Length: 508
Image (tube, rainbow, N blue to C red):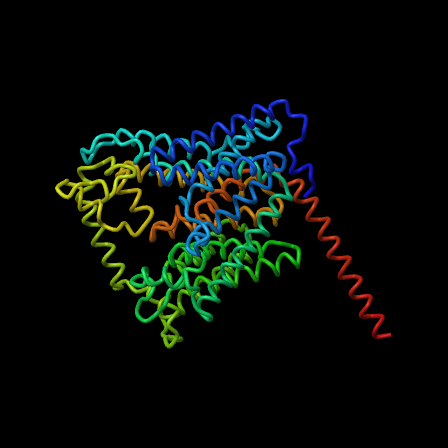
């Protein structure tokens, strides 16, 4: 990666005005914080402004570093909060960096090319954001219009998807950046997996013990401790790390470079191990489902048969045998295939109650509305207090049958659009593997969101929605990718040749 990739250059005539615009945005952010969170929130934001100004001055000249900072911050923000290193709103660092990146791209006309975001995913997200904007007029609960509450919810289920899409589409547009992202993601996933091992074999830290005591009812089940790793809970950990494993399994199968294959395979194995320690049964289903999707995207009978055999073996092992029942982790995974499972039945009963109320609320109870602002005598009080247990159920409750239909439709639109890129527009096998791996991981994540409230949590949302945006950029990157891959492949062959010569010399 050269300095020219990172620098904006000193000849940009809009640089001064851009700085003023960004500083003005920071001032508006402080005012918004005062309005929505009171004096404490305002104080935190105001105190952060000098730091933000200094950071902006640096990042304006090396803006790609802001993207990598976003990637790392997004991965560790909840962990930092749990460990006592961060006390502000969790979404604030993400949003500040995303808006900074988008603002810089708009200022620098050389980088902001609108064709990068003019695709099916961008169109789908605009539809979803437009629907969520209309939800500002939803007064199903008869509470009047509370724009602050609506905007707070809108950010979580719509705007952050759009921000992530824009940032990834704009900045991950060449081979070096794509390669760096794949390696960095692998490194972070390995750290999360090793932290899970540390929690299981060396115990929690003092701060994690405090958190665990408050979460014990859901993280100590049938004598099994469910480990959250660096995520906000075990379910988010299990589904997110399982979907990451799907990505790196596919990358390991399709890369022609031995070093990459080893890295990707190690990452996939560690992620699978970490998923098993999460005690999240959905994670196993997500892992298998993501791999099965690859059968259709691989366009390879050999790979399809291999994945099918492995997947069917695991399903049969868990569903039709009792081998390994002495291991608590295997018992927990096996319960995912039990139709009589108690927790699954409770969810079905809750959803039946929700469906009765939602017959009279086609638009849902409103974005941002929950038990904290629905009075006890309100008709929809019960609906606001039932745990949704699932991201899709949460969207169903808050945006209604109409909203969940729009969400499913737009999600399918962006996912199928990405799959069509893999199937019909990419020619290089390794590049197809990158696109297919991301599509399979996204599908795995969506399945997890159907079963658990994990889709919009840190770091999953930005990782999987953002990476799906990259798939639409792959046809632009492919030519450079093929050249660089061939160059590295020839270097690999040369190393193997020299190694073989040394062996022959020793024999002589």
